[in-house]
Image (cartoon, rainbow over all chains, first blue to last red):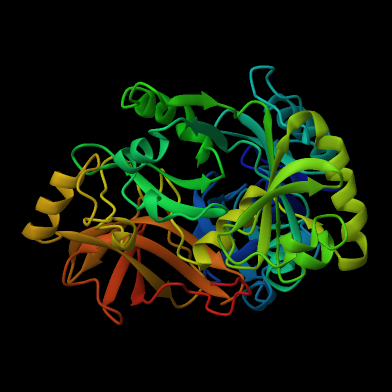
Length: 128
Length: 369
């Protein structure tokens, strides 16, 4: 199982991509495989403050439900409204069109502390 | 990922792996939960045809002069009413009326077969063994018996030419012994999906022949492999019970809405006195179906509230691919069980409005009743 190298990861199976102090966040392909078909994503409102490791939303799949944990601290500056009409995008394109929120970093240095692709792959392998 | 060696396998485990299934431990068996996706698999069964490996189910054979009387003592439904070639759904109860398991009884010309849930197999066998009278032979054939289900409106098309023609004429809950791809089997028009379909019981050593035959015969009909995930959404749309979720040894068939399977006209069966008393005193709670708006899904164990007070608990919940909305079942206090009653389900800190709904949720299935 390979994971994209242009994003960083959390142990809670979120990915994060940084550009100009704003971090785009979604869930990994490993997470979508574990969850199965996603039917609903509950996302926060724009402007909300989020904290590292704290819940910012909920992802409902047919079989199970999971909280979403913020990889970084900051402010929600955009949410993916396309997911409300078509949550299946999360399964189809988890690292692209299936993104969930964009967070303006409170601390520019925090992103670099997230897991690399290799570290995340090791974590997933150890889970089995 | 490698599975612990302690998990039991079926003759089809390697086919599942090769097909890319996600395999999980289910009642001690390594079983496919999903191949392509729960929703796609679900819809294939509703509109086409799907193949399920349900070999984990347990099969007991009962023989002897007193076989029917023995079965009528241990289960609540009426085994004596079965014709040869007919199957029956029944709870099996404890003396206090709690449900040991829900099962199927098949009547053959000279014996009976009892099909039980995998998670209850050891418990059921011990339970029945201790009530077995002298002169009845009771054997566990689970390890040697493979079980595949072919379910969906096109199920008969897949089997045509590979089973006796008479098998395609079977009514719902009827069966016959006969060859499937040349392998001696029990061909049963039963299922857990609400669609037309067949369940095929045969010796595990012929697994490859039957599986490969079905895959080949299924190609022109779009046969898809179906995991336990879709099996659950299919059964829940029909309001069918899942032991361990909706019913268990603390629930009675009466409160579960299974009174049609409890035959008080039988002079004796285990649990009869307790169930008669339970009925006379009135049911304190009842299993209901409910629908929700939105897309948040009720889950097993979530509290059910009415007027800010906890009045019950969710036993099953899912997102219904057919209705495209969340559905569930749960026990609520009597009086709140009537269709249309507004309830609330507590999902963490969120309250989800729910409405009691008649079951089945899905009423357009293709099965013959």
